[in-house]
Image (cartoon, rainbow, N blue to C red; front, side, top):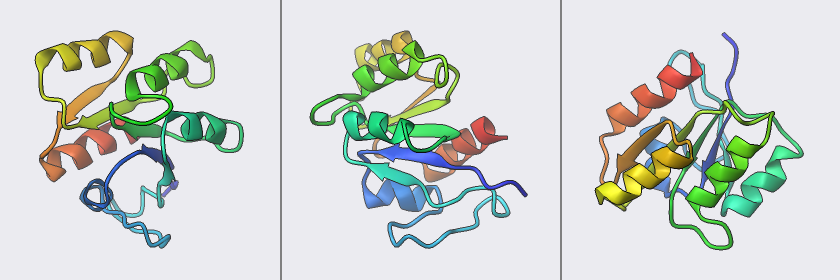
Length: 130
């Protein structure tokens, strides 16, 4: 089974646990080993710097981050040829419809509000990675 990498940008430990990962650095095996430990970034700028070093298969991002928010990060990803089609799942506390519309308009593939259903998050991620 090919191991898939994904970014987690500015997410809580609860989000990592929901997708079957911890912040301990150990690999976990949800979906029969299909996911490897995610790369965690403090904000959108850290995520962009990671683009220069590694290739990832998906991004989980919050909207509210310092230095570069989630909408700015998604715009940046969509502007680059090498990340234009990278699946982006927004996981945020912003539950207003206007925030969902903004995220979708810049290219988010999925939008979940906190508190979220961990099964739904895993299914979304699994669907984009397979």
